[in-house]
Every structure is written in C-alpha cells, then in structure tokens.
Amino acid sequence: MPRPTNKTDLLAAMDRERSQVETVLDPLAPARMVQPGVVGEWSVKDVLAHLAEWEQMALGWYRAGLRGEAPALPAPGFKWNELPRLNRAIFERHRDRPLDEVVAWWRSSREEMRGVVASLSDADLFTPGRFAWTRKNTLGTYFVSATSSHDLWARTRIARWRRREEV
Image 1: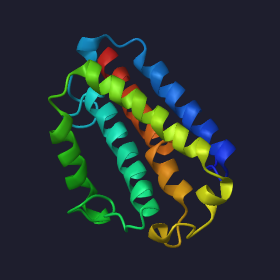
Image 2: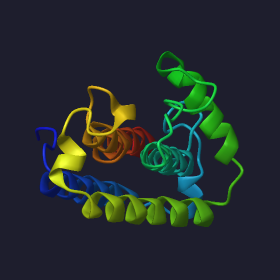
Image 3: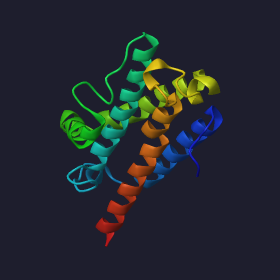
C-alpha cells in the first residue's frame, strides 16, 4: 500500500495495520507474550510497549509544537542517528511493566492518536512545514511512521517469531 497522503487514508491505514497486529496476537497466551526473542531479547509485550512509546513521543512532538516549542527530536538527549540507543532506553523503561498494563496502554495510546488524527484537517496533516517544528516534513509523515508503518514492522517481526517458535 502507498503511504497515506490524506487523513482518510491515514486513519484507514492505522486501523488496518492495528487490526492485523491484533490478528497476529490473538492466538498468543499471556505466557508467550512475555517470552523473549521476538526482536533480539524483546518479547511481544516489549514490542507493544515500544509501539505505544513511539506514538506517545509523536503526540508529544505535536503538542509541544502547538505550545510554540521546538520538540527534542526524537527524544531529549537523543539524535536520529541514535535510534538503537533510544530504543534500548525505551525497552529498559518498560521491561518490568506487567503485560496487562502494557496491552492496555498500547490500546489506549492508539485511541488517543486516532482521536488527534481525526481532529486534524488534511492541510494540518499533509502540508509540508505547516508546523514550524516539522520544517519541510509533514505532521502526517511523523504520524504514519509512529502508527501504521510501525505496526507493519511489529506485525512482521511477531509473525516471523511465531513461525520460528512453532517449528
């Protein structure tokens, strides 16, 4: 599928990819969801925490921009070329959280993100530089990366892990 270029397509991509992640998760018992090895030492639970954290970071960037601030991208103390270190910090921050708490957060984060996207216009989402902090990019680019594209990545990794484990 091509990358979304309008709000309708973004919401559809978010819903489609999240539904497909849910489908991959459906047969997994809780004990399997905390088993390491999905992405390196990460479990399914850790992948879900990763997804929620990145959605929350994108929402934080948007909200900081609304306040007239320039958000620290991708996160305070990190540069874009340090994503492995940032992702490790995210893993460490959430690794001991209970599965049910992470799953609830993952679901509520998407609902929050979906509400924000639904409240915005196509121009807000897909006009380059509409928000000063996005510079030549669009807000939609950041939101696509934090939602549907990230869900596709997660679904692929979880499905691959399940196939390896079921052999």
